Structure formats: C-alpha cells, structure tokens
Image (cartoon, rainbow, N blue to C red; front, side, top):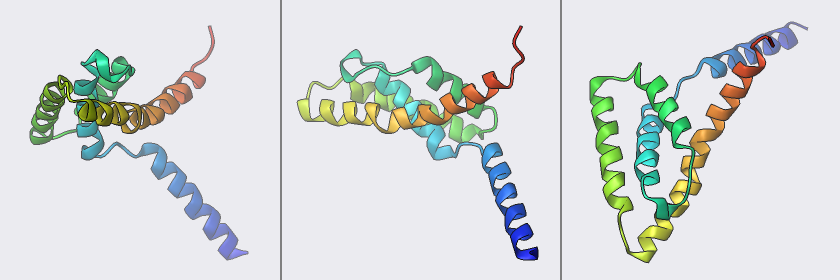
Length: 121
C-alpha cells in the first residue's frame, strides 16, 4: 500500500514539474530560426505571431548571450531562406512544416489550457 501511495505521489510531482517546465535554450534558438525561415513566402506559412509570442515570453529568462545568438540565428535563417536552390528550398520547407510546427504545438496547448481556466463573461 505504501508503494502505491509513493508511486502516486511521484507521478503527481512529475506532472507538476512538467507543467512548469520552460523551453530549453535550443528551443528558443530554434524558434528564432523558424521566424527567420518564415520570412520567405516561398517556403510555406506558419503562425509567426505565435512564434514571436513564444520568443518574447521565453526571452525574459534568457541570458544576454542566448538572446544575441537568437538574433544571429534569425538573421542567418532569413538569409538562408532567400535561396533559389530547389534542394535547399525543399529542405527548408520541410523544416518549417516539421520542427517549426512542433514548436507551436506546446504553445497551442498552453494557450488552450489558460483560456479554459478563464471565467466566461
């Protein structure tokens, strides 16, 4: 009986910890890259406003070094997105529709949870 209670307690703590987990520096840099890639209309469409909201929210807790690297990553991706090479365009389009969309999924879930917690007027 004690092991069941202990297991339930640990599972509850793990869920609570996951809810408060912040994005990693790598995710922050990836989001900046995605915004840079989204600047090229030829690569596809993505919700840039949601990514910018993610970057703003996560940028508050980042060091100056990571913030600077984020700006560099965005600039590099913007330059890369201007390519006319069909293979690069295909690779960048796949990145924008794959990993970049995956960054938006947790944000949508978080926004839905916060909207659900708001009282209706």
